[in-house]
Amino acid sequence: MTSPVYFASMRAFSDHESTTAKVQRLFDKAGFAELIAPQDKTAIKLHFGEKGNDGFISPVYVRQVVEKVKACGALPFLTDTNTLYAGSRSNAVEHIGTAILHGFDYAVAGAPVIIADGLNGKNIHKVTINKRHFNEVSIAGDIAAADSLIVLSHFKGHIVSGFGGAIKNLAMGCAPPEGKRAQHNARPFTIPEKCTGCASCMKICPKDAITVKKKKSVIDMERCIGCFECMHACPEHAIDINWETEIPEFMERMVEYAYGAVLEKENKVGYLNFLIRITPDCDCFAFSDAPMVPDIGILASKDPVAIDAASFDLVNQQQGYTDSLLTAHHHKGGDKFKGVHAQTDGYRQVKYAEEIGMGTGSYELIKI
Image (tube, rainbow, N blue to C red; front, side):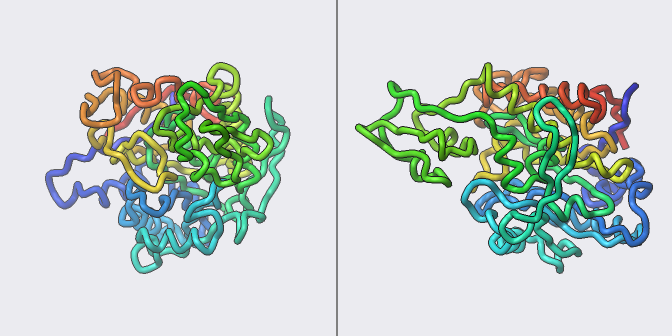
C-alpha cells in the first residue's frame, strides 16, 4: 500500500505557475478540503522562526493556505508552541511578537496567531497512546481543541534527529515545554581533552546547568533538560551525546509524540512540506546557514510518514553545495543529512512511525 504525495517543483514559466498558485493547487489536489468542515476551528501549525532566523516558511505562502481554509467555511488560526529553551519564543507574549516581526500578522497572513499551549506553556491536553515509551503524552491544549489541522513544515536538517519535517513538527511543535522535555531523554556530556573552557556552552544554557571549572565545562545532569543548545554552541565540538544508546530512544519518543498529536484527529489532518532553502539546522537557531542543496519544491499529502519519506529522498537526489556545511555525500543519492551531522539517522523517524501505524514510507509521487 502506497500513499499519494503531490509535488510541485520550483520551476515556473507563467503567472499560472507561481509558487503561490502552486500552494493553492497542492491544497486542492491533495484533497484537503475534504478534511475541513464549515465552522471548523482549523489550526495551521507552522514554525515562526527564532528571532534572527530567516529560513522559515514565507507568510506569503501561508496566506494561500489560510484563504483555502476560509473557502471551506472554516475559521483558521496560525499556531505553534512555546520553546523549552530560552529565546524569543519561550512565552506567548514574546512568541507572538516574534511571529509578527517575521511577517505573520493579520494583514499579511490573514489569520490570528494563537500560541497553542498558552502564556507560559501550561495549557495542556493529555492523550493516551499506549506505546513503547509513553502511555500518555502532553499535547498543547489549543491544538488538541482544534477541529482540523494543516501542518506546514520547512524541511531541513537537525543536529540530533537528522532532519525536521512533518513528523518532528507534530512531535516537538505540538508539545508544550513539559512534552518537549519528556521527549528529550538524552543528556550531553563534555569531552575534557577537547574543551578549552571558552564558556560558550555555559552562556547558551537555558537552565544554568553548565559551569566552567578548572578551564573545563561541567554539565549538571540534574538541571540539564537535554535541549542540545550547548552542542551547537561549542566551537571545539567538545560536547557530545551517546548516539548508540540514547538517540535511537529519543527518535522513538519523538515519533510517539507525533502519533499522539494527531490521534484524536482522524481524517482531519493535512501536510505540506516546503523543500525550500534546505538549511543544515532547525529554524530554532537565531540564524540561518546557507542551504545544502538547491530549492526543490513543495509536497502535499494526508500521510505524514509518506511526505517525510518523499522529502528525504528528493533532498538526497540533489547535488549538494560544496560551499555549504556539507562535508560529505555531495553526490546525487548521498545522504545529505549525514553529510552535515554524520552520526544522525533521520530515516529512523520514518521507519518507527510506520511501525506504530502513523502511515507508510511507501509513496507515489504525483507531479502537478
